[in-house]
Structure formats: structure tokens, C-alpha cells
Image 1: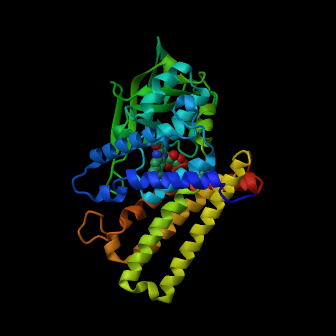
Image 2 (image 1 turned 180 degrees about the horizontal axis):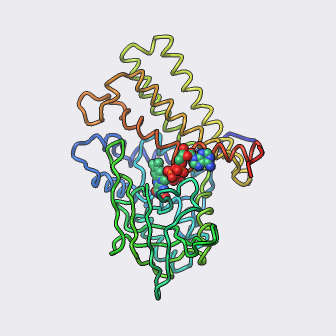
Image 3 (image 1 turned 180 degrees about the vertical axis):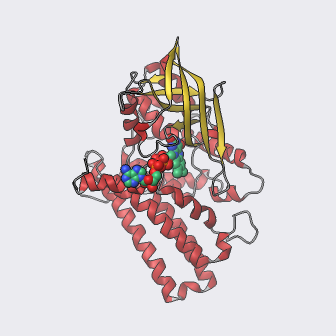
Length: 392
Ligand SMILES: Cc1cc2nc3c(=O)[nH]c(=O)nc-3n(C[C@H](O)[C@H](O)[C@H](O)COP(=O)(O)OP(=O)(O)OC[C@H]3O[C@@H](n4cnc5c(N)ncnc54)[C@H](O)[C@@H]3O)c2cc1C
């Protein structure tokens, strides 16, 4: 297994780095601290950033050229992600559309659906959110109860989704709904539903971090056009599984790159206070640095495997546990070592300047839940890697 980048990949990394140096005007953490911004104007900053990435050819790079991508492999995608994290670039508002729905449309959608939805997704004229989870159906997604009933040229959707990221800003939602209440997997269909209509209500959820990036979405006979079912009726589970498995390598280098910036900030602050010289502090920092290198090595192993043409294996579960649980240890340590100043919200004049530690600490709590909780990832490793017996 070769874990080194090729010359062309190193050249690509340098090209992205140079482009970011001249195109990213401010790290996103500075935008967030700017008192002139509110939640809506920060979304606008992110929208403009998405457009810049698109114009430069750095958006959806893995997609076929016909649909606005460059058809590049997982390694180039991972390099781009790592460079974006390193520079603290804003996350694009349509990340759910681009990482999940776009690939589903490319693989399972009709030509009309691709033409209708992909250009506006890339240009961020339309923001998408993901309507999968429901109260009572998260880890066990196939138990979902939202239903869709035929009504002329439409289906009428009734039910509730929850934890809908970007729901408060989205124009469209991709929804898993039951078209058959009895068939657990074959009774699920995949709908594209406009949010701005009677019968859809989005209620923002206030988070521990103070933001409301999530919403609950209530459907009360909301209309979805028949031609906006992705795949065939009853194929929703298959479509959902394709999209959840897409771009497995994208995160492989992003998190270690992001954590490098956290570690740099922490070390710099501890040097300034003189605490970096204390042996017990050095030991804790050293442990975190080593663990981040292990994450990076594991990411490179995933990428080498994908680059060799192998199907994504259970490495992604190991990686998911690795980066999400590490973020909690990292931010726990930061709050412990940096003291009360690190617990202040970023806009407080006395808050630590290098990073919004309190926000990162709280946000890290979510990492072990979304995209499959740590327990679910451990179940996957137990079954597929260790081949442990399962209870019947
Ligand atoms: C930041 C964030 C963003 C999200 N964004 C979206 C979004 O945009 N769209 C969307 O549809 N959803 C979204 N979600 C929802 C997310 O997918 C679910 O929270 C996740 O699947 C867990 O489901 P749940 O919350 O219902 O918890 P549950 O499934 O009820 O789990 C509760 C606890 O039980 C454990 N558990 C459950 N089943 C098992 C088992 N078989 N074995 C062992 N332990 C088990 C879990 O690990 C967890 O600790 C988001 C969640 C978060 C935190």
C-alpha cells in the first residue's frame, strides 16, 4: 500500500493552496466573530463562497464533467477538503445537496430531474436539506412513518422529520416517505419536495451552541410531483444507501487538517501563557498530536485502498469513530488547559482570540451522533470486521 501522493497530486495540492491564498479573504472564524453578521448574512457569505468555488472548478469535483464536475478521484477530493479545512474556508450552504442528493440524481435520477435540479444546486440558487430522520427513526431509519399517498399527478406527504440541517434556509427537501406501510425496505420512496408551499412547516430548533441551524419539518398533505420521485416507486431505500455511501474518502484528510489548526491555536495560547513548558501540559499536547497523526495515517490508508480501485470497506466506520471521539477529547482538553476564557462565546471581548473553543466543544458533542452514532459504527465493525456473532 503506497501512502504517498503522486507528483501530480502534490502539484494539485499546491495549486489549491495558492488559489485559497488569493481567493479566501478571511478565515470563516473571523466572519463568525464579526458583530456585523447575523445567521442570515453568514449563510450569504457561504453562498458567495460556494459560487467562487464553482467558478474555479473546485465544487463537486468528483462528478462527471457533463454535470459540472471534473471527474477526479477520491484522493484529489480529499486533498481539496484538507486544504479547505486548513485555510478555514466556509462550508458551502448546499453541502447536503452536493454530497448526497447530487450523486443520487446522477446515479438514479431521470434526465429531466438532473437538468432541472443540478445547475441550481451548484449555483446555490436553491438550497437543499435532507429529510430522513424522524422522532423515533434515526439509527433505525427504515422504521420511518412519514407517508406519501397518490393524488392525481402528485403524492401527498404527511408526517414529521427532525434534525433537518439547514431546514430554516432550504428551498427544497429530499424526503424518504412510505408508499407502502407494510414492506419495511421496499415500501420506502424518495421524493423531492418544495418547502415553500402550504402543507410544509419548518420550525427551527435552538441548539446548545445558540444557533438554529436545524429544524423540524412538518408535512401536512404537502405536494410532491410524481416526476419528482427519484428512482422507481419503492426504490427509496436503495437510492438512500447509494447516496450515504458516496465519496467515502472525502473526510479522510479533512479532519486531521482541521485538528492541526486547533492544535496550533492551543499550543500558541499555552506558549503565550507559559503553560506549554509544564511537563503535564506537554504530555497531554503530545498525546493529542500523536492521536491526530494516527487519524491522518488511517485516512491515507482509506484513500490508498480507494485509489487501488477497492470498494470502500469498514475503514470508514473506524474513521468516523476516530475523528468524532478525538474532537471531544481535543476540545475537552482545550477547555481544561485554557481555562475560563475559552468558555466565553467568541463575540465576548474577553474570549480567547485563536478559536471559538466553547463552540467547538459543544459542536463536538454532535459528531458522535450524526452520520451514524458511535454505537452503530461499533456494531458495523463488530459484524463486518470482527465477524462477531449477532443475536437473532
Ligand atoms: C448535528 C446533526 C445533524 C443532523 N442532520 C440531519 C439531517 O440533515 N437530516 C436528517 O435526516 N437527520 C439528521 N440528523 C439526525 C441523525 O441522523 C440522527 O440523530 C442519528 O441517526 C441518530 O438517530 P437518533 O437521534 O434518532 O438516535 P437514536 O437512534 O434514537 O439513538 C439513541 C441512542 O441509542 C443508540 N442506539 C440506537 N440503536 C442502537 C443499536 N442498534 N445498538 C446500539 N446502540 C444503539 C445510539 O447510538 C444513541 O446513543 C442530524 C443529527 C445531528 C446530531
